[in-house]
Image (cartoon, rainbow, N blue to C red; front, side, top):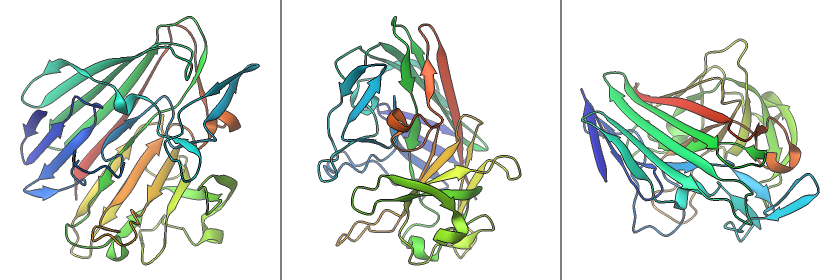
Length: 295
């Protein structure tokens, strides 16, 4: 485990999976801490690549060649959240306030090229800057997408029902309620998911991908409790979608106690729909950046 700090912020990063395990501001958890004893696969703080979200039936095509990736969401028969969150990551740079890790995703029957991956975590007085990069060091053009999976906490010991959410999105993907796969892009008003003005979440169940409205709104998501405390997520132009999930964990005491906010480069099942899919040519690189700070 790697510990970094700056000002009122502290963070922990794990080398197994390369994800964010903890982010604290003035003794307050801003993200749900990683629990290595939890086998429920919550993906807390995970890195999501070379695809975020779901691939229907774990199958996709490159040209005429079909690939089958492992089904890890067995109840819905989907391949969820990529391949890099199970890799071991090597520490390349480590200082008081910054850590850079790197790893390699080898070519396989699941994905036909080798990706050289890196992730950077840096704290300053304004919060945590989190970056992920990939370079295609193989000889085959491949589809690519990425995201991260933090569960934000506006105020510990409170439910998301009481929090307000400000989200720059005018459209959302409606989903199949059984498999959570995309059906059609609709207006947020039609789904009663309009959070552009900071609406209170209430009892709404959300596990949906929102299309970023980047032309008129800041690239910021704010999650705020009644007492005015909260968390801000900023994201760069590489994120064109945002998955929001109200962490509904039926029958568990920590149900709806945090909010997954995942700015993504592409929507669910992009390996099949090709919507906003990145094609990494041999030698090409892609980077994304986010920032998490306290409100």
